[in-house]
Image 1 (spheres, rainbow, N blue to C red):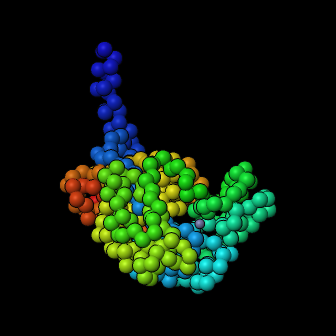
Image 2: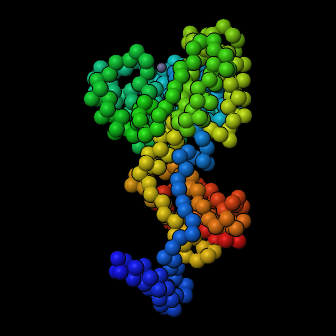
Image 3: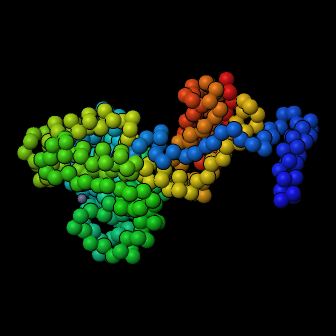
Length: 345
Ligand SMILES: [Zn+2]
């Protein structure tokens, strides 16, 4: 009991001596204080939003290209489009898929070259690998430069071992992968109205989970047909998009790979808040993931002393001033970069 009391008394004195001796040695060197007035955490979702929303499309149908892509892009919404780069529909609107869609910040994903499945290893390499190479070319990247979302296509058959091997080699992530957070998903039936498309989103917000809405065709009249694909009417589709826009502050609408990277990085990250003085802090964000493929920025929340109104943040060389509410600072940072420095203004 006595020893415990003595050590409690002595630790603060010892710390003060250490700090003094360091600051005398080198006044410029930043020395962390032995305490931190504040805490830090990684937000569950980007920008501390309540849920993640994926809007996904299969088959690169003509209606998706001519109606869907512009409707999404003009609203600043992001969809994940599983395309067949060797398929007839894709080739009809190649320019939209390869230029307009990426210019509108849309994510192209792998739905295999021709949507036919594969019966040999070489066919798997063609169906998965060639589509991947097409997508990297569209992204203006080298082969194997980034992760690609994958969906094998309904009704197709594969040798599971071959497929697994080729997906790994080509950095494809099956969209059914588990990221540690529950996904609720809905495939939108032919002729659905906007309310039916929207119905899962409030549940995802309530539970702070991932909501995935899957579309097939989009048609310019209400006949449920997009070149032989079951479709929703573009008028209802756009009504749905406007409902999503209205709650954009609550849901993080992003592409599949961006959500996937965020989740995996967060699961493998650690964040530390260091205090150097009453006016200077640092945030160290690291993750054990491979920086080449896992480069999504994570949202960091720093709880600083409540009287801080403004601070300057040096985040990997970019310096910005933030206005705080109740001492809470929020910014996005990529893991394994230099320490983010925060200075009170
Ligand atoms: Zn399909």
